[in-house]
Length: 154
Image 1: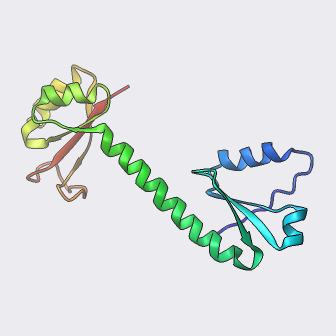
Image 2: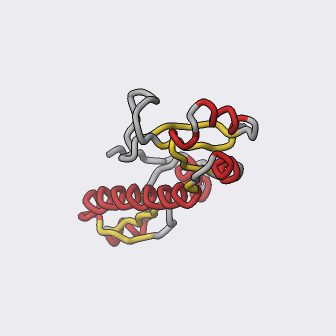
Image 3: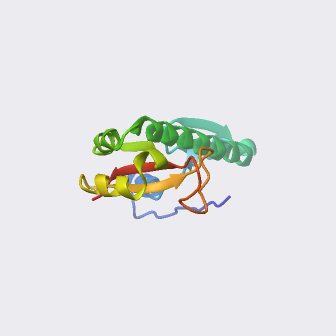
């Protein structure tokens, strides 16, 4: 875990907080004079902006746990967004239609491999990756039961 102190006094607090959010820092620790007098700090999650007061004694344990929680929550949200944008297609035409505005998943054999790629290319759709049914990457495109993920090219 890495921590960095932002002690710039010539920059307002709001600007400093925004700077760290833009850098992707998952948890910000805010410490002020009142906090120090009470032996507490405020933790702020980047993903939800939730604030939590924590005692200085519990700080390292809570920050470590919060970073794990932020990572898990952000991964779950990204996975849900990705899955919501992928449509299963049973024909190249269905794949082209779905991929025009998102992603399509189609069997590599159903697609006809290179012939399907040529048909998709007419709609500016390309194969983005091939996967095995278990989600791993194949060694070659000749393996059985491969899945093609297709999307619009720009």
